[in-house]
Length: 373
Image 1 (cartoon, helix red, strand yellow):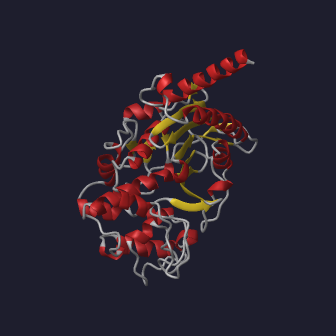
Image 2 (image 1 turned 90 degrees about the vertical axis):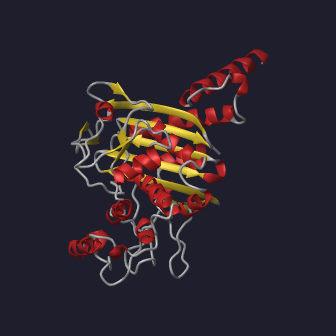
Image 3 (image 1 turned 135 degrees about the horizontal axis):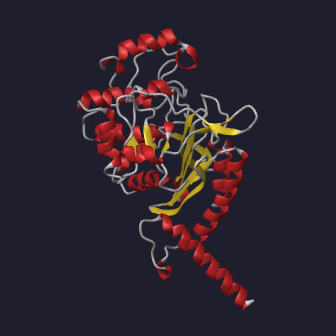
């Protein structure tokens, strides 16, 4: 029994050593933080479940990062960034993170508000171009704009970034990524800077995100990231995984347009925790669920979904390019835990309505919460 116990202890410490390769510098085994062994075991358990889910969802490549407070517990790649060339996913593999850009945009907006340069409660109609956007949106209609009352009801930037612009502004939640994308315009106008430059100055540089960049129709992707970018895939009608066309061009909007890695997003998460990006009041505002004018709790803060599950607050966002990329960024504040997943297909998606949250319907989110109980 003694010999078995020693072997098991040795295996546990070996797992910890591997897990801490995700950090910039791993501490000696005798100086591991409290709970490191338990976290490494839970992370290993989650990776096994995530790999099974990945294969079931036909995701060619998946990058994973898990953060406890300000420590990267695990950074791992599963599968292939390029199936044909057999290039494996690593924590440094860049992906298009799609709508996981929205939390990054929220940081930029709140940082400018901290400095007195941006008023989140100023009417959108006071910004150049919004009236034309409003007319186009009303003419377009569809699921995002059939009840977009921008021409008869004042809308504020806070309401845009809190996804409460449909119907009477401020009365209900409706996920509207197109209107959110327009939130970059006020930030650009009050600073006379491109939104991409603002993201670089207020997020990438202070968070030390060296493997991240903006991309849009007038801004090509950095060559080093382009060479390593995970190739997008989808399952065809027979279930065969085949290459997808790259995403189409976008403008310099707040709703997408970021290429990043799980390790860089973990750095973003740590920088948020350490107060390097926002002060405590701004962080709290960003992660506080909105309320309608009638007092109803809404499942979105500023750039983040906010909901409760079994008495715990969950902060999260997904990203989706259909048949190309998907992402999940999930925080459990009470446990000081964060999960970041990036995939080169849309296999991380789950069915949900535009007027709800529902992170726990994601099998990956459930597996994470179960693994770290």
